Length: 138
Image (cartoon, rainbow, N blue to C red; front, side, top):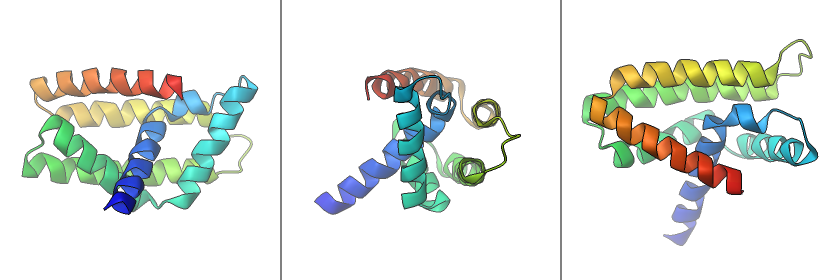
């Protein structure tokens, strides 16, 4: 049971980091570069489907998603986990990863908010701020 919790915690951490990947990929300081490398290592250790499933589970419990919403959120998380994975692995110097992560994150969030009720959007926004605070303390 403890092993499952640690694996789930790892996936949740990856989900949080992916959610705020634009911050981690800024590369302005050594600390931020270390975060970028940590994100990359964590992404390589997990699959997009594992990260999407863990994030979906967390969102389901946090936002009280119904079955229809859970299916939509799972598909959205899978799509963007795959996109983030491809972007992280890109070696194309012409791609501005920070800008692309920020664009993808904003696009995903806009789509997510069309799935959620108004109350769930408020809970999501409140949770996102808390996750960002937690992320900044890492």
